Length: 164
Image 1: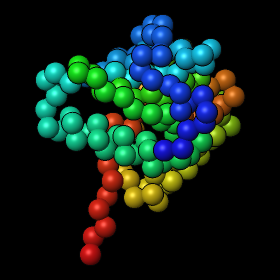
Image 2 (image 1 turned 90 degrees about the vertical axis):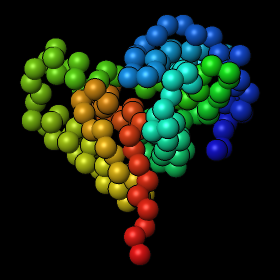
Image 3 (image 1 turned 45 degrees about the horizontal axis):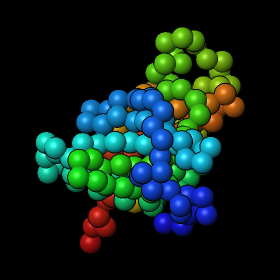
């Protein structure tokens, strides 16, 4: 993975945890700071991980490392220690579509079209790259103030083997 000079200096110990910004089924996501830059740190406890969960983590890392698209969260690097596995991700701006829909209830037609086009374009890219995205739901898609969509959870993304 190519990293810029700031990112290549990041270690797990150099990250300052600020607060928990999200919870997953087996993980939590921290807002972290490194040299005045903010990131999201997904923390997954190793204890109790079953074989399928380990496989999903591996597949998520593979997908995040391979898929480079403006509407997919960027993986900076990964870490592990004796208790956890960590994914350091760009800090995506915005809120999940599920939260926005609860507050706003309705979107203007033009905004719906823009969101749908971005989601379809991102799914098309994912499929073109040989992956299947198996967890499309409003809580896994962020929308920022500019109307940009970002897919933030690729935990169930799976590489499709070529059939011969």
